[in-house]
Length: 507
Image 1: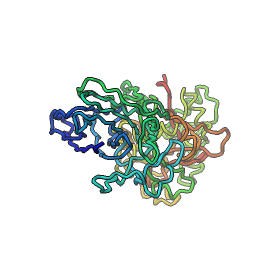
Image 2 (image 1 turned 180 degrees about the horizontal axis):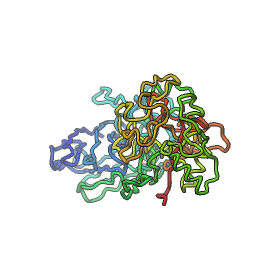
Image 3 (image 1 turned 90 degrees about the horizontal axis):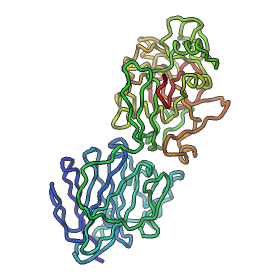
Image 4 (image 1 turned 120 degrees about the horizontal axis):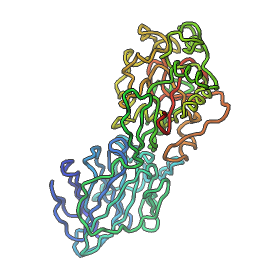
């Protein structure tokens, strides 16, 4: 069989990002010229959010015998770019053929060096590359293999097969489903797809199905609507401006970073934030601010009987950060709107449960701090701009190495009325600075089985009972460079506070 010749054209968002991958020619903007039969119009859509989780589409084509003959990678970071349509057809009107189409949707920038087709399951490292780095893409005898490939854990990877038959034209819709994030296609031996052998995920988490011939629909119309963002979609009603909790909609999110920061890597107790992963979350509610001294005191007066914050009936530091920066006092001392500190993890959790909630999971906390309300994951709750002394309570004590150059604005933890710039798009306060905050999970690296083998939606590593060290997220008033990605484990400390998460809005 003669190798198909391919050509690409893109008409841009205004024309619904039409692509023509053809074996003869592609038209310009507007309608693509009708190709000689047989023809298949492949229509690719996703139910993941764009551009947060999907910003690019990689398309690879293989002949029926598994020969890789085409590869293209397109930026598709505008919702108007979806669905993506392209036509595959034979150069000979009377000749049929089969084509494997591999489709990979992934966020911009999440790639790795291509070292051959290396199978990866969600709970295992990449297979070792072969010396030949097979398969290779050859065009007219010249190696045209792409230098990079999408990161498997950040990708929806779907393999389909279309049979082009003489005299027949049709449409093949393909949905790149959120449940398939991180499930790499098993293309086949040596990276060569084959019917009865190749498998890929369709719509079930961590499951692959045999690739079968796709049934072409007689309709050749190109759709004008998309499923973007519908995976796990659970919208929120608007929050009242004075609501003490903020509703966070369900959907996809990104946990972790591509690599640990130099700052984080310098801290021995740091738990790494790699590998980066895509997960799903159901809708939840989060306290707008850290639990304050006033709120903790009110809980005690209302019948809370669990562990209480350590008392400090003197002024707040600067002396030691282990006790004399504690904010809670026997009677009000002008610190009622300070975050309640010096309360252990067990007490913080018990108080959240008294309020009708619990400590947030790591995923809930990081989603609120770096994703919720943003089009893409950010470094800080407000965006990517570096923090300043005025924006957030940071570097207020000359301890632990930082300079303390922000101490002129007030040492130690500060009241809620300060650092108004430490605010997320949803109105959640002080996730970057002031005090670090307890979270619910066991403090494990993201390479642990709990993360790699756990569920894709609402992942959670149950905490052990009676542990000496507990996890927290974010930074406190001592740190020089607050980063929500910072995660470590401690017990009671004056730089530790908490806020609560809820399945339903508390009354």
